[in-house]
Image (cartoon, rainbow, N blue to C red; front, side):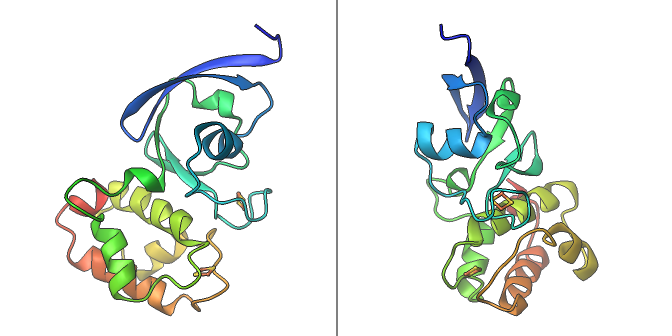
Length: 163
Ligand code: FES
Ligand code: FES
């Protein structure tokens, strides 16, 4: 094996993954370019925009700042893992219903930050939502529809919004 290559094993959206990766690769690069899941976006690449947010062991992280090697042994969820065979995740449905999506570039990151928040706190108030998505920048919506989407999902959340 190339000494600069690292072997990692982790769970991605419920399925086991075993990969050889460049040791210096970011989690975002591996997810997008080796695995081919394009939901997490590269906006800034320096931890400022939140477009690359994924969940690692239940916590929202900026995958552009994380080494892929750190995924070894982790349980990873990306936006592709939110919907089920029954349809869209309630958070996704709420974003659609309340027009929380315009160009959509920020949406996967916002969904993952919110999903992680609801796991920890199923009924956050406005300030708690605001804090949780403070690192997710949106150039299109003005945030009003995003808050409406999240707050409606919270209102109807009886646990499924964090599944
Ligand atoms: S691409 Fe990761 S925070 Fe902007
Ligand atoms: S919908 Fe375009 S950046 Fe948020």
